[in-house]
Each structure stands twice: as C-alpha cells, then as structure tokens.
Amino acid sequence: MTIRRIVTDVATSEVKEVSDFYIALFDLDVVMDQGWIMTLSTGSTGPVQLSIASEGGGGAPVPDMSIEVADVDAVFRKAEGLGAVVTYALRDEPWGVRRFFVEDPTGRILNILMHK
Image 1 (tube, rainbow, N blue to C red):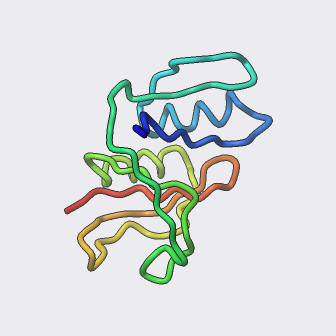
Image 2 (cartoon, rainbow, N blue to C red; image 1 turned 120 degrees about the vertical axis):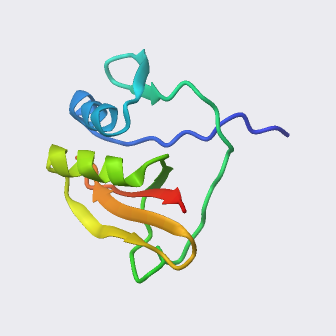
C-alpha cells in the first residue's frame, strides 16, 4: 500500500474565517472551495507523517496539529500581528527544534516548528 497524503480536517461552521486565518499565517492557496469545505495547500508534496503522543514535550499538552516551516520566527511575528493566542512561547527545545504553540480560531492548538 502507498499512502499519497494524509489530510487534516478542521471542523467549523465558519469555513471562511478559519480558512482566512490559515491563509494569512501560512500563505496557503485555495485549491478547492465548495462553500461547506475549503481545501488549502502549498502546492508541494512532503512526507506523510502521523505522530501519536502522550504529551507535547517540555511539559506542553499534545497539540492538535504540527506544522513545520522554514522560518518559525517569521511565522511567530505573523501570528502576533494577527492577534492569535500563543499558548506556548517561542523557544528552542533540547531535542533540536525551535517552536511555539498558537490557537487557531476554532481553539485547536498548532505546534509551529522548524528544525535547528
């Protein structure tokens, strides 16, 4: 069996508002819009990964989603500019990542990270 992709679904009655948040924070493109569902993408492919955890590391709760970016500091500044709620401050972790946690408009916790 070959997995081609794993898609994260975010349940909300405010599809446009939540999509706007992800578009603004991560510069994503709309690749499908049916009104009741909107799919956003970078247009590139990456490895398929699924993490199963009992905690989020460093005493943090398990995030709902992890998103690796090229420049976590730039995304952190964007999140602050959007007025997003940061629930875990930007920091370097002993296992080699720099990350922060932010809430999306539905209250899901996003682990935004880059490898150092």
